[in-house]
Length: 155
Length: 155
DNA sequence: TATTGTTATACTCTATAACTATA
DNA sequence: TATAGTTATAGAGTATAACAATA
Image (cartoon, rainbow over all chains, first blue to last red; front, side, top):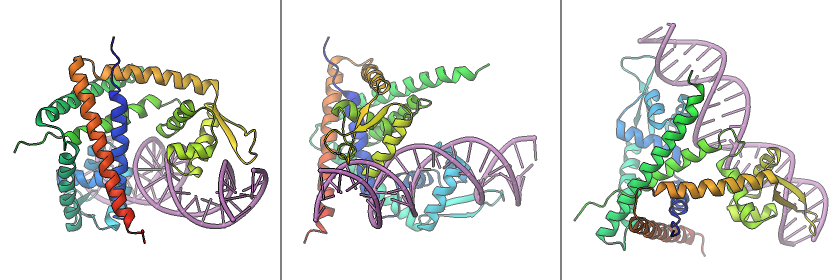
């Protein structure tokens, strides 16, 4: 049996590098990975309540409060009264936030190209399919594990 | 020009899934990603001073103090006097820590196999090479960026 | 009664700076 | 004088629980 190449190790390595790269890119901007993730959802979803953001990001409502506080005080997002529900806020991007997301889209596209520089089209295609397979498998395994451990509290 | 498949998005997705999977796996064990990383280095390097661990993990000495505190109180690692330098500690795995690392090695190998289940050998080979290329590129780009921004403080 | 967001509290990871003991 | 590790302090992300205002 041939040795399986260390796919997992390479993924973990790529993870660490991406994380480091993002931290470096954000440094001095007032942004962080978590805050940017929220901005990104706002960009994707449009103006949203904090509850919807909490669901989209899969974090607690409390966490969203803190992130929005930070983004508000650094000028990337703002809270406005919700038009029909006076309990809720309508969180939206400021012009500065929009601009940051536009830049981020450009950087993202550029990095996507740079990563595969030196590979031919077919190689990129293989890589893309392989990655899709692997993330699919990961998702299945997590699902299984979650279902199994979730079973305990099923009556 | 053909559209570049979203390699970066897929890597980021895999990252997020791996992170979630690790968090799930550690839950209830007293371990966390950061603590396990330290244990792993201890497993790799053998008994070490906190300074060497700080270098190996690329974090501050203070951070290592906290992680070792936690690992000591949960029984995975221990501090012993350093034989020749009375300022330093010799941090090592306890039997429980050794066992945890042995399990982790098995889980790691199993996951490595599970991720590529359904791909043939050639596909795995392609994926592996593609990933190696991409992480290499990432490393180059980070290096460049670091050198460029590091330049400012060069006189 | 249920939901939205806040305050209160707590834990984890991380960092820098000041300090102690030792080299 | 330099180094190993600690205490002090701080910021960021995260969580749960209790609570206020509103639905």
